[in-house]
Every structure is written in C-alpha cells, then in structure tokens.
Image (cartoon, rainbow, N blue to C red; front, side):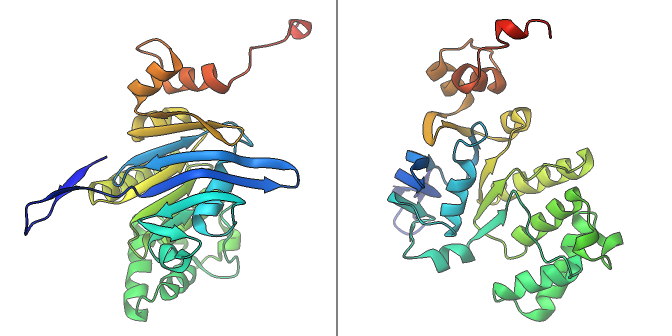
Length: 268
C-alpha cells in the first residue's frame, strides 16, 4: 500500500485502499456465487481479478456497482461504505460491463452526452468531451450511426468512452477487450495506463491472461467465490509453489485448472 505526505504538517499516512472487501457472501437460491470473499485493492493499482467461468467475478463487480446486495460481509469503495454511500460511489467510478447494455436507438455522440449529463456535466462541456472521446477511440467516422448498428468491438469502445467522460477515480472493467480488434485494444490499454499514472485505480477482469500479466501490478485469483491467491506476480508464484519463471497462465492453471484429458478421450 502506498504512503503519501501531508504538505502542511509533513506527516506520512497510509492511503486508503480503493476497494476493501471483507467476508463477502452472495447467495442465489441455495448456491453461493460469492462465498466469504476478502480482497484489498490498493489505490493507484492496476488490479487483475481472475477466475474461471462462474467463479464470482461479475457478481462481485455488480456488488461494487451497487446493483446487487450481498447477503453478508462489508464493502468499502474509495473510503465509502456500500450500500450506505452507493450514490456517491457511483459518481466516482467508471464501468465497462461485460454485457455492454447500451441505448441502441441513440448515436454514439448522443449516448455519451446523455451519460455526461447524468453525472452533472454541463451540456456544452458534455458535447465537447463526447466529440473528443469519439475521436480518441476511433469512432468519429461512425458518429451518425445508431449504437444498434455497432459491432461488438465498437460497443466496447463506446462503453469505454462513457466510463471516461466524467474522469472517475476508479474503473471497473469486466472483460473490456473482448471483441475489440488489436488496434482498439492497444489504444484502450494505453488509456487505462494513462489513468493509472494520474492516480486512478483499475479493477480488471479478463480471460486473456497474457494481457493481465503485462498490465497488472496486483492480481487476485478466485475460485468458487473465494480468493485462492493475491499479490504481485512473484508473490503468486511463491504462493502457488510454481517455478520462478512461470507465467500467469501456468499459475492460474495450476491453481484452478483441470487435470487434462481423461483416458477415455485419448483418441483425440
């Protein structure tokens, strides 16, 4: 966790985590989607949140967004408590959801201006920012297209623009690069790294482990709603007892992967 200094008194104090989750539990019927999850996301980090399908990643993000209420546990986001401070938290986070539910009958510019107005940004400023973000994310040539005509990659990019438009302190990214071409994905990564350099925090889920390994300085791997390991890549290698040069993919598979093909399928 990073420390900062009070410019008047010179006192050094610990910066509060961007996200602090303790003993989180979420039940659906009789099954636990999240089962006693505890995660600390340092402020200013690029944090990878990994796990197999059904591990509880998207449920956790929905809880952080205030869209789903947990059955037990505590959550603090940017020093604020959920659900008590959910409205204030939403003002300070930017989200790229996995399903990219957008308004299909608006153009990209109209949608971005609408999102900006929801955050209280004045109409002239909203218009300028929407135009600039469409250009930045290579969507300006399609500015007159309805979002319903966008490809999956274009929808991800306009969702990224919507997450950026109010300059949030925390980004929640659920598979943000899925369906995005190599040029668009590289641009989105550069934008996120720039946000980190300005003091923001990124909380990222992705099944592309090579991307997480290159971008993230902290990683948590979860399985069946619980954290298996958390730390830097070197700390993960140590906790997983893998080789000193093992990749994130090798660590991940060693902890939550299967045991290979069964003998009765050896004809494959």
